[in-house]
Length: 75
Image (cartoon, rainbow, N blue to C red; front, side, top):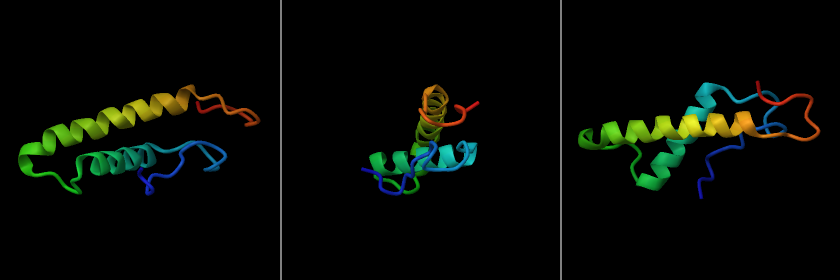
């Protein structure tokens, strides 16, 4: 669906994903789903809240994944 979103777990990236990378992926997702690159002022709050919630969920997902064969999981 969102071809611009890159995989954020090893071995796709050599180290753990940064907060900026996680937020960028969340932003791309919200843009794709909403159909807005930048929302109108009256939609800005809900747009920003969605990005934050998706970024938080993504961080929890990455924290919980067990990557077999990896030296260590995300800390």
